[in-house]
Every structure is written in structure tokens, then in C-alpha cells.
Image (cartoon, rainbow, N blue to C red):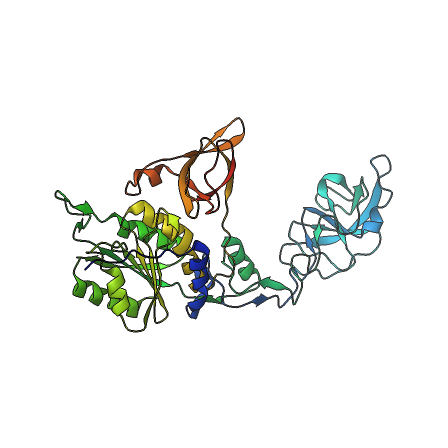
Length: 413
């Protein structure tokens, strides 16, 4: 039977489908496991941070008004009322003309509003071991060398938002507020299926006409980078019943399924037929107007997104980067993706086809303080082109190529 060629879908239309897939459920995890996870709740400050005035320098806690007019030629004279150790609550108050020895991070006593750096003082008095006074050689303003109460965060202030990815600094913030257990979204479980009679395990020596299973391990790394948990379902031959059974098992156990190979329109490309036969299945996309990666399938089976990815490794990686990754981030609960693009200058002309979004592999290099993007040309079955690449340059579907010297934005890969 001859298969009809697929009808391609615009890239933006494909990305709109992510809204129909539900997020994964949430779970409580220990703070030590939060870095890299997605928050499933808003975090509100339940106290001021800090909740006491802290010194940012070693020196003397004083009232700034006691320093007014002090200079090296005409130093001020302050009584040392005591010393404050780290973690100690001062038991005394500072009045006009008084000071207290304090270390960085120490709590200022009542009456003090600033810290005079030790470099701007000299002790005088009974003896060198128990000085009673200091001379100060400059004037300072209230709040100088001090972190004020609530200067970091005020009570009731939004600290972190639901849907935010937690970095190391956010983990530190959670610790500062004593959040030992945090509600985060579970990592999505993502099945990886490799298909094709020509594909053999990586520990086998491929005979003529055979290739090692590159895509499973490439997709495994990409899934981990995107925040998912990959699960291997092996290499499935081009046999309808075997593929259907494996796909059904993967859909039942996973939040998303990635099928490598079999997404085109050849007689032996079974993916579309298998997916259409699964219960509660809906084929959303069979072909995307991008290159490389045109023969891509997206199906919805229950609430599981199932992707049929091209067998060529470069095509599979490009499709993952520009289409699959946003879906993983969506079901992971991520509200806003912080995708960083790098500006660079194109080193040569690039041709493209109107009506199709093209992704060109580029290598970055720096010269005379400027960053340049050099296109890497090669077929979509050659993994060396991705190994050499630092990123992708997108050529919009309404643009017919880019000229040498054009400023482009590079998507890191």
C-alpha cells in the first residue's frame, strides 16, 4: 500500500499543542534535593531577612551621629562599652559617645546604626590588652557597613514563584528561611524507543547495512538535560505487533514517549500506524515545516505526548531542542524558560527555503573581541556536524537565507 505524504504543520502551531498536556504531579522533597527542580508552590517570606541589624565589616558599632566632624586632624573620642561575639545577642545599649567591638556578621546593639571600620580607629586607654576608648578618624552615615532589618527580604514578600526552576542560589534562599521540605513537581518519566531492523546495540559490531544505536543514548542525555528521567525500552524491529506492544507499555508507564526512527512515509515506517491504533490516540502532527526534522510525529495518547522522531541523529537532536524540550519543560511545571541566545556575526551566506524554518549548525569563534558564527555544513545523518557545533541559528520561514556579516542569535546545543 502506498502511503500519502504527510501534511506539514507550522512550528508555532506545533508549540501551541503543549497547552493540552497536563503537568506532572507534585511531591515534597528534602531541601538537599531541590536544585534543578521546579517549584510547585509560591514561597512567601514569613519573617524579615535579616531580622536583626548585621555588621558587614570588623570594627565598632556606633551611632553615626557620634562620628560627625571626626577627621584625622581632629579625631573623635568614643568609650568602648563592650564586645559582641558572632551569634551573640548584645546585653547592653549604645548611647552617644559609646561604641562596641563587633565582628563581621555580628548583631548591632540597640542604639547603634552603623559600623566604624577598624582601619579608621585606634585604641587608647588603660593598656593594649583592655583598651577603654577609641579614636575615630572619619565621619560615617547611618546604615554604613550594616545590613538593615529586612534589607534582603521583607516579611510577606514573594520569595519564589510556582513554576520557577530552583538553582543553587534559590536552594540557599530556601535554607535561609528554614524550608527543610519543599513542594516541587515530579520529574517527568520519559520512555525512549529505538526502531529499525538496521539498528544494533552499541556493544555489537555492526555488519554491513547495520548501525549502532546512537539515538537512544543521545536522547538519554538530552532528556536528562531537560529535567526528565529517561527509561530505555530497547531496539524494536520493524514489526507492527512488536512495536505496538512496546509503545503501549511505554505509554502506560510514562509521561512522554520518544520513538526514534519510523516517522517518515516509507512502507516500513510503522510509527504512525501503530500510534493511530492505540486506545485514546489522536495524531496531532505528521510533519513539521522545519529542516532538519521535517518527518516528525506528535500524538496524544491519553495525557501522554508521543513523539515520532527522525532516525537521523542530527534531525532528532534539532527536533528535540526546538520542539520536544519545550513540551518537557511544560509538563515539568516550568512557567518561564530561561533560554539564553548568543549574539554572533555570520561568516558566510546561508541559503534557505521560503515557508520553512531552517536550523543551521554553527561553530563559534572569537576574533578581535567579536564573536563569529561559522556554519557547519553536512547531512543530517552525520553526528560529527553536531559534535563540532556550539549551537543552532534559526532562519525564519519568511526569510530566504542570511548574508555574510548578518548578526544572528545562536541557540546553544
